[in-house]
Image (cartoon, rainbow, N blue to C red):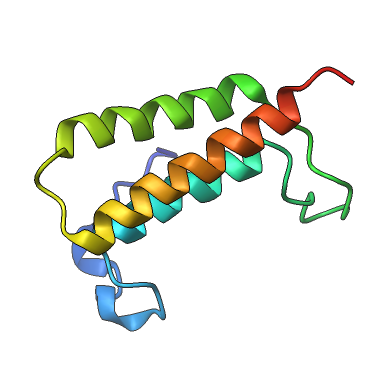
Length: 102
């Protein structure tokens, strides 16, 4: 930190912003979004240039989701499991596309 301590009491209440509700599916969607950025599927917000793939970080996101899938097996609701499984499938297919030699 830059010399000043962060006082948690000075932060606005969590309901002040229009953020998605915090639940497992939102958490998974956040990791998926990060992975697709790492696959180059997002433009640079400053220049508008196409994103540059980083397969190492994308693979790390896939591994994290696989870890979550293993550790939560049998403990997820139907929608949570669907989001995780479908997201992981879509992400793997996109990874293979991006990683394919040209």
